[in-house]
Each structure stands twice: as C-alpha cells, then as structure tokens.
Length: 123
Image 1: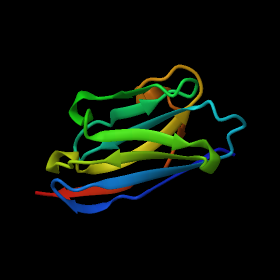
Image 2: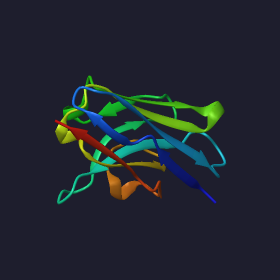
Image 3: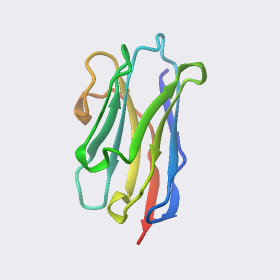
Image 4: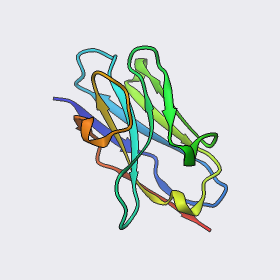
C-alpha cells in the first residue's frame, strides 16, 4: 500500500523559512513524480511544484519561483519542499502527492496524496 506522510509545517514570521517533508512508502520503483500542492481557505488547490521521476527536472508556479525548492532523497524515500522568503499569502495547507508517468502540477492527475501540513505565515 502506497502511503505519503507530510510534515514540517508550522507558524513562521514573514521572511522566514520552513522545510516540508514527505515520507513515501509502498512504491515498487522510485521513478514516480512528486508534486507539492497547497490550498488556502476559500481557494482551489494549487499545484506549486513538481519533480520528475526520471531526470529530476523541476517546475514551479510563478508565485514561488526563486523562493521554494523541491528535492528528494531516494535513499530515505523522502521528498522535500524548502520554503524560503515566506509571505503571508503562502499561508495554506500544503500537500505532497505522487504519480507515475508525465510530470505536471495538475492535481487531478495525481494518484497518491499525503494528509497535508499547515503553514501559517504571520505578517
């Protein structure tokens, strides 16, 4: 059974940093795509970053480029999202997700989801 467990959220002041982790288990191969999404109250879930399972290419939505960094450590079966330069508008529940196949930030195409971790940025 595939399982993703997200952690690392918290309360931080504007300009601060957090590192989110996504511990994965149950995958038969490690070439799955990792995506990070977030959902703020009253808003749709937004795909903010993804990392290819094959060549480790990455992509980011414009609002987080230069501030957030996605990565993974296959030896630890863990993916990360480093959040730097946090802004109040980054406040949301953050989710990690995984899929095989093409890499993108389309939530409906992801098969496996973690439970979400709250990030709150005080201004």
